[in-house]
Amino acid sequence: MKFASKLFLLPFLFVLMTSLFTLTCFGSELDSKLSNDTYTGTNFSKTSQIDLTSKGSINNSSSALGKEESKGALIVKVTTLNGGQGRNFSSDFIVNIHANDPVPDVFKGNVSGTVIKLSMGMYSVTTSSIPNYNTSFSSDCNGGIMKVETKNCNIVMTYSKTG
Image 1 (cartoon, helix red, strand yellow):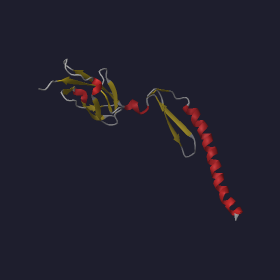
Image 2: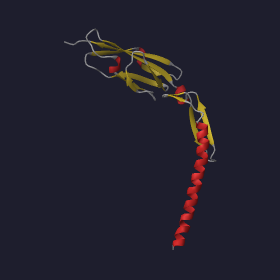
Image 3: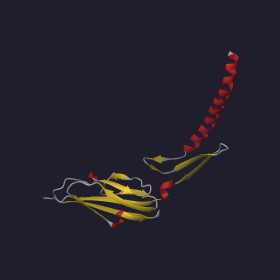
Image 4: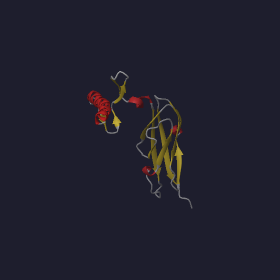
């Protein structure tokens, strides 16, 4: 009986050892291919796509910006006019982008502008509301965008004391 149980484990151990050997071989080749890629902060200067084909070979295809190069750009600037009485800043307002795959889709307002990458199609921009502030949007804060376009959305948050 003990001999039969050892025979049962033998094929399992063979499969396990073969798998570990295969992973070790592919892992070292994969590491050497990926070591040539450079990354800086949150912006990738190069991206890689690894494809394990049925024959077990590794294909590495790279592009300068990957998926991001096929997107349009929307620059969103938020200006706050306090009129000497308001106390909020542009960063107090949350901006939401409604579009096909916006990156980023939610962020804090910024006077100098935030660059949003958008897939081709329709988009719109909204902001959070704070009491006593009226919002005005420029014409490029909604509409359509192509993958080669850059548009500027200017949002002005104006303080208005209500009596």
